[in-house]
Length: 227
Image (cartoon, rainbow, N blue to C red; front, side):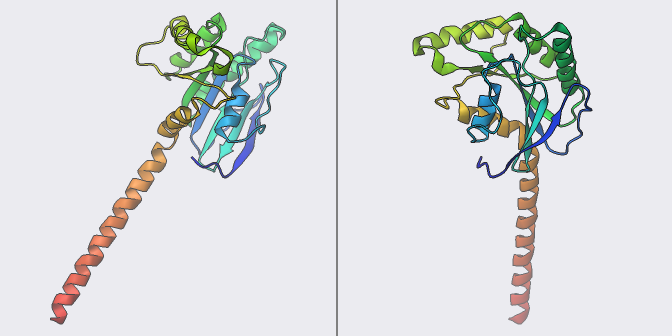
């Protein structure tokens, strides 16, 4: 997809109401410092539009990025940051749960896991949470460039086992540095988000084809009358 327009359109906090948008949404979840903002920047073909930080727990809001007036990429708050109080963690958790449960336009959730480490208890909890809300999340194993190529299959297996994934569940190794996995990510974003647009295009093509055939019949009839 060619990214022409990007706009941070909606920012909601713990006390905010979940917005009723009219565009399909794809959400990104993961623990603090797993690389969500870097991944979203890569998807948007921007270097630093989504704010990145070396300080975990920085994102405390749900951020909606409008892409080409076609969809929203939704950045959920990072979880599992040890230096955040339990009360704040609870508020973030409720905010994420409320979004997953009530958003009418949410099409899919991508769950980011650091490929260097086995999934944590919080990762497994988030995975189960997403599944309980009716989604089969796409797993993105981030920071691929931080491990040796010989370690990739071992770590992918560890992530799959740690989350209890099924064989058919999708896991995409990804690096925001080398952009490996980026096109595969876009393939899945397109498949979930652009279905409605594809239907609209198909209908439009059918109408055009019908009009074209009608015009041909009319032209043939007119020619026959002249003869």
